[in-house]
Each structure stands twice: as C-alpha cells, then as structure tokens.
Image (cartoon, rainbow, N blue to C red):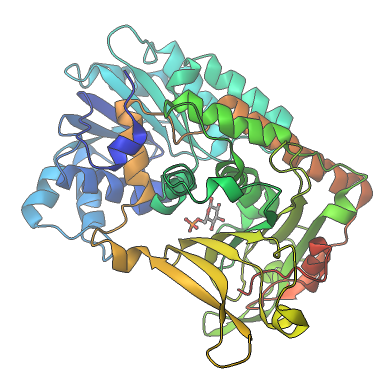
Length: 499
Ligand code: BG6
C-alpha cells in the first residue's frame, strides 16, 4: 500500500523496512554535499533505523577510511548540528566496497553483505557515462531480484541529452528494474515550497476558480542564479541552460502550476495529471524558435562582490563557446484551461539575484471604472509563489490611497514561511530519500514525464541547430539578463518581474 504523500508531509510516521542503501560513486561530490547530510538527518530523527549504507567506488579506500571521511563530513559547518555520539553512531552504519563499476567481484561483495537487509536501494551518484554499466552489472549479479524484498534504483539527471538518448537510457533501466522501482530524482520536487503548489491550489477554495484563461493573463516562471558554472564547465558546455534547468526543474514547476486536480493523491494519479500538461505543450521547432525563444551567455561583469569573467573564460569552456547560460521561452499549452495564456520561462546563471518563483499575472478588471490616472498607477493582480530564497506567497492588489481622490496604489499581502512556521524547511534530498525507502514515488519523474519533457526540449534544440536562430546574445554578469527577453512578452502591458 503506498502512503499518502501529503499525509506524510504532515508528519505521520513513515518507517522504512530494513534496507541496504548502496551509493555508487560514493567518492563524489553529491555524496558529500547532499546524500550524507540528508541520511544523517534521517538518522538523527530516528527514521530509517534499520538501514545499512554501503559506499561503492573505485578509490583506494577501506571501510575504516570511508567511515573517517563520513565522520569528517558530519563535522562540516553546514552539516546538521549533532553530538559526537550521534556522529559516531552514524559513521558506524556505513561500510565501503572498493571496486570499478564494471567488475563483477564488486557486485558479488555487495551481495554477500547485509543478509538481514532484504530490501536494496541503489543510488547512482556516478558520472552519467557509468549508468549503463552499473545497471547492467546489478542485473547480471542478481542484485535486482525482487523476490526477497524490493530492489530499487535512484537516478538523477542528466537522463540523456535528447529524446533518443533519454529513451535509450530508459531501456537500459527497464532491462533491470520494473518501472515502479525506478526513482528519477528532480531535487526541485523535494523542496517544501514546490510541494506547496498543489496544497495551495487544491487545499483552498479561492484560487482554483480563477486559475484559468478567463482570469489569468500570463504566468512567469523564473529560476535565476547568481553563481556561474563554477567547476562544472565540462558538463555545462555539453548541456546549457535549456537542458540543465528547463528540461527538468522548470517543466516540473510548469506542470505543477498548470495541472488539473488529480482524482486522489496516489503517485500515478498525480503524475498522470502532470504528464498531461507536458503533452499539451505546443512544440517549438525550426519555424518557431526565433519568435518563441531567447538564448544568451554571460559576459564579464560584477557578481558576488567582485569582478567575474565571462562564460567563455571559465575553466574547461571553449573560448568561442556557443552554449547558452540563459534561456527564456514562451510556452503555450494547447489545453482547455490554458489556451491563449503564455507561460514565460526564464533561467540563467550569473544574474543579479538568486530567485526561484512562479508568478501568476491576472487580467485587468473588465471596466476601467476609476479613470486613466488610476489605470496608470494600478497594476494587475499578481500572485507570486516564491520557492527560494525567503520562501513564501505574495498577492498584490490595488487599494485606495487615503484622501478624497480615488487614486490607487498597488499593495501586497504577504505570507512568509520563516515567520509563519517555526519548523526548519527540510532539505529536498532528505524527503526524497525517505520517500524512495518507503516506496512513495509521487515526487519522482515517471518515464513518460521524462519522455514528454525531452520531446519538447529536443524540438527546440533541433530548431536552434537547424536555423542558428535566435542569435546568441550576451548579458553582463550580475545583470538581470539580456534585453532580448522582453520580446517574448509580446505586449506593452507585460513586464518580466524585476529580479
Ligand atoms: C541543478 C543544475 O540541477 O540545479 C545546476 O545542474 C543548478 O546548474 C542547480 O545550479 C540549482 O539548484 P538549487 O537547488 O540550488 O536551486
């Protein structure tokens, strides 16, 4: 029986069965930055009390030395605060298998370990070029056998680089695991404020009646970052903003904000509705890329308190690179609810502010009762869902300025998570790991979701390659992005929200 995810979010107990978690690529960055802190946090809360964790990597480490490393990770500044006793106890739950990804002995060693833990959860924290080998070896060694307990795999993007390679990868996974045991992570879905989109829409009566093309003028989805590509130049050169952010995180946000109410909260009911949104997106191909998309790259500028180089001067980036670090799209949904409402998406690195938000911009009232002056000073209503930072929700509306005239000003009604709830927002990975352990796949991407998202994105990539349009434009690091993005608004009345 699968659990109700929102009930789980309300803190009802969710104790996973005894299990063995194997992290392939345990010597990498993801393990240190995300997985160990999330697992430790679960350990502190007493969740997953019957779990063993095995690191699997090529490094010349032993269980002893791996434990010492894990212990050191728990002392890092951003690790959850805890006593030395707790940290030692967590480190003692960890062991290590040293092996290359294609050596059958490594997998045989995994099989021998942990007979008391019939359930197996594999986490692919390896470079993507190792996915296929690891999955095939898991299968060949019998570790994916579902008869004693579950065998489940968690995998993260990049899940391919276009529709064809994504499908090929899906085949590889399907050769070893049934679809319901494949957990494709999009860490955005683990964020509390992203989960709140559904609660806001379907747990209240006042929003849904106006959530459609009769009342909404357009929707903006922004994911702006201040960081550059950091040390990921090699990966990013082959990816670009469209693949890195839009194919996954942004299309997930779009599907949550645009979906129909699901019949219930079973994982497939929710994902059925999300995939319908993705399928309703009007394709953007060679004939439309120029009008519907913008691509740009950051040039040198001022960011994070100092001068920073342009993208082409970053490490492992070609000096004449054509990779976009910024992309904006005007997305149309061919659906009853949203026909005629543009969804304006933009994402970029090295922008002036870090912000992830969805804003729903409503139409103006049908009659301009208060005259032209009021019309100029009053803005259409906007509902902003802020995912990060300063998570919260703001509704702006117009109010009369005190005095005799009927002048108006736009004011805001504000809800901030930080002041409304005492609880800390849990880390996305913590929630997602626990969900995978108990078998709740609601917040993971199903095969057909990934497929539909790639189909759309591959159309744009093909259009860009075929027409070399729109031209790559440039924006200063630390600015709010390229001016070209304003052409997607297609109306003098619309403005991108200020970053
Ligand atoms: C990742 C992208 O998926 O998401 C990164 O590969 C990006 O380029 C990151 O920086 C943003 O995630 P968050 O949680 O920091 O907003």
